[in-house]
Length: 253
Length: 310
Image (cartoon, rainbow over all chains, first blue to last red; front, side, top):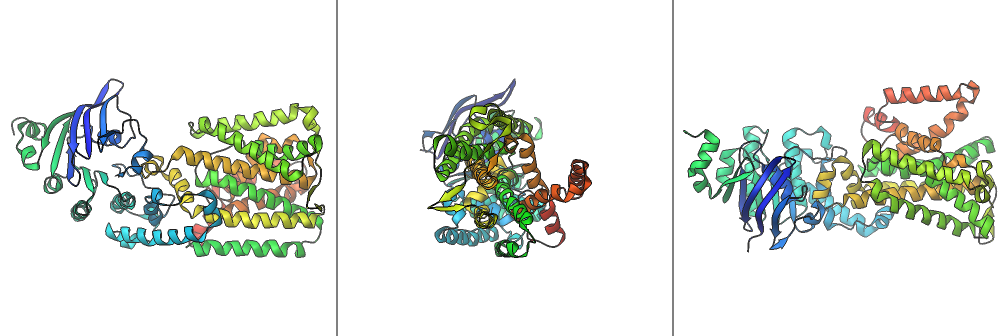
């Protein structure tokens, strides 16, 4: 059984069929990439799987159990984490607090205990602060541990989102264009970071335009075009697929 | 960083402790008591508006429920004032919880309108049910006693309210730097991001709405007993706006801003009394100037200018 099974997944926005009848499976522990030209439906696919959108029809199963219609916070409970293509960082909080929010479900969220600052809760929070600082170092943000989120540059915020997602201790992480807008040096750092995440046993689902990164990292690749599945396979298979070559480079390439 | 935040708490406690010995007369003690009552309400309201990023233009309605529960239940039914206060808070909490779910489907100006409507309905109800509430004339409130000890003079009230304010400030500081508080601030920052890390956004909005409403209700009860009389003005739309203004002027998402906002806006009408008839105009002008030059509110703006903290 695969970790994630997607069958005949579709969503229509009015007349626009953003994702049409897409099926694929992701095994636990691999790096699975979704590629395709702009507007192919990659982010929409992420939004469907992580519960942000509800599919028009189709089935999504996690551990063989349907998760269609579950809200994002329920899916978070089941070990699903994600980052966003257009940054979703809480600018009203410090960088460290953004990462700490990622640990939300692992904490005692009781209101009364919080208001009274019970020693057990305060101790746990102090530990979490350390843990979050460690995660920030892990994603290469050591110089921003004391920073406010709204004072950080774009590339650092991208990694802050990854840190927040890792604080959830997820089984499955969806990274939506983690290298978009980064310079070559930063891209290499993100590439290494994704490898580290995969090596730690977390299943990685990646949307990325940087083909070198995708081809190097991925165990399997799904190619979308105009909301439809164009091809799926290992990077070698995808690279040789004539339909993929046609979609990316033009028919005669 | 949060060590610094608690430093302000000690300052608040010192000021509260020294104040009754330095104020020249009971007029100022009364003013201080009213400031402290407002400060407690504004602390709760700032959790909702400043920290969680939701608006309520109907909080005076909740305050009114508490005040009238403390007036009606002991007067007409012979309830103990403490029980009446609890009943008012429970009723407010229940009403806020039931209404919050449909209300928080709304955002921005629609949320503002829904809470505005709620506040107006409550204020109309207390105005019209004259048999119970005394209508527009209001009604007297029995004294508040506990274990044979009656709270009667201004000094006693001041100490009670001062202790409540110190505790509320401490609890609020604790809350914002806790898992609950971070979730609250995170949903303000990005609803979608907070939901994908597992925050049940609707539940948190409802929780903080109910909490701030109950705060307002309890302080409504305290106001009723302290003043010894309630009028429908307590529950008025104008009063709701005044409370929101205290949040905004003091500073959104700032604990000490809440206190400063409450202190300034409670004092300002007194200070402007010399303008004779022009006080409302002066009041409005001051607010406008504040919003133009200190758009983030007093405390956050000054904190940003004179280093971090706040």
